[in-house]
Image (cartoon, rainbow, N blue to C red; front, side, top):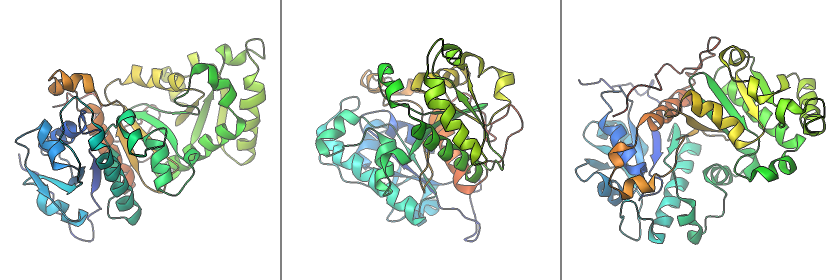
Length: 361
């Protein structure tokens, strides 16, 4: 089935950029499959940023069309994957990381951020990177999120990670740290920063005029009035009082084990969680395959699939087993956020209008 992608200059939005991520990982294959399923999923034109070698190493017969500027995307899209090429020093072996490709991975990210800041790209979707392969090329950030903040000229702590699926949005206040470090790094300032970034994004990106935030406690039973821990009183409540004084609709702290059943989810637009697994367990239970990582607090729209490079799958020649759901969801959300088309959901429905559970190709 042919899809009409014709738009006028007045109505066309800048295309979304997809960075290749780790060349040896699943990213290039997923981007290729996204393009190959463009008619099935009625996708608007998008372009990749990366090495032609990387894409062809995974999908040898993929038609690739080099472009010099994102404005050329629509004209090239039906005949091949539009690609802003990035040079890489070495070959790509699927499933085997190489220091020779690291500079190309970083260059693709830098190009994507520059294009998004200039408005030539409407948003960026980042395929997973392998951080261990990048450190030798001067990559100093803890991950994608921190690096993108720095490239936007902002402190790393400005960027906040949201995970989203149909029915739930969660924001972990602390992220990739050992559990024993959470209480030490969980400060009122960190909670306030995460809440402000979430509140602002819900208003300006998701179209929710009066966002409602719910906050999880750190300890079992939210500390049970100090019997099971003091952090609710010393860290969380002071932050919530400050946020309420500034007019924010924010409630809690709640016991985390009672926050995520269907009735409770209807009462908030996003949940602030105190640590990584507290946020991701409910989200992945609801939608293991279709979660989306959304970076808040930046002047650009960035999403990514909620999974890693899958190097083991690629090395075993099983790339075809990697599901497309999360990449497809990340792309659709990037398009919607960049065009301001995600509106306030009805209670219990945070869908952007597309199923996250449809079989992926």
